[in-house]
Image (tube, rainbow, N blue to C red; front, side, top):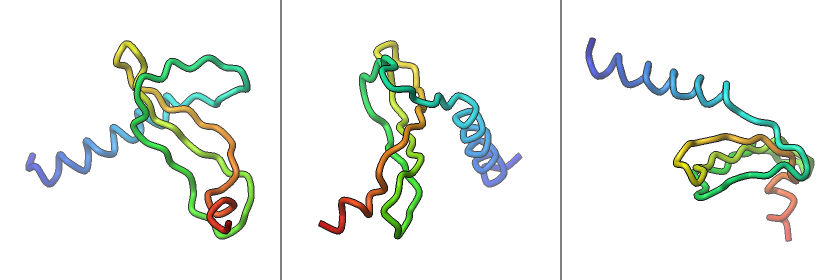
Length: 79
């Protein structure tokens, strides 16, 4: 297989693995966050509550993704 074939396949598998390990945050749930890797939320033009995702590394070096609810970025960008 060529690199052109392997790279998209590796990215697809990594994304699938990440999606399978997403934890839905519950209020008061303890999180062991040593370093935040990425924050994601859907783009929207409406000020509303959205599902956001935080990918982080814990103190043991394991990567996790947690889903949580928050106000959309557009709510605070409007001043």
